[in-house]
Amino acid sequence: MASLLKEGEAGIVRNVADLRKWQPGAPRAGCQALEKGIEAMTSQSGRSPRPALVAAEPQLFVADIKASCDFFTQKLGFAIVFVYGEPPFYAQVKRDGAQLNLRCVDAPVIDPALRDRESLLSAAITVAAADGIKQLFLEFQSAGIVFHQTLKQEPWGARNFIVKDPDGNLLLFAGPAG
Image (cartoon, rainbow, N blue to C red):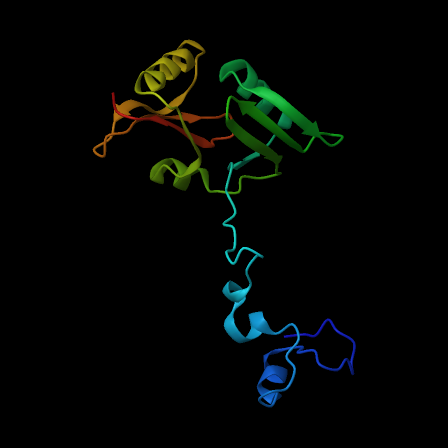
């Protein structure tokens, strides 16, 4: 473990090897985490707050940011949050609580034949209510979407379908059984 402290600073433990050199009773300023692990470090209340995860933003690899933004806005009903770069190479689209990041790349990151054969998903998006998944499927169908998998009931109870975007990314849309 490399030290970020200046040489010769007294009473400071710089790494685990230094910790082992300390004699019983010697001051051990700042070494609680080294002795007992990071879990030993707590807040004033005695408990470490657990960070709350609030969202996931899958990143899709695309060949053309403008074409991809057009697909998501015109066909899937998303809105553009931002487009970055000149020429554009990064963007984000959003529909309700679902956000997708779009990253321009020169060549496919995943072998297209493997992705299709194994149904390798780029993102999974869920709806809250059982009737919502059928309504969403019909909306996309009327927009002329290409489906990798049409709406179906899974053995575990979920109802889902998979959309293929112009770059071949597979997007799972799922909802609870109704």
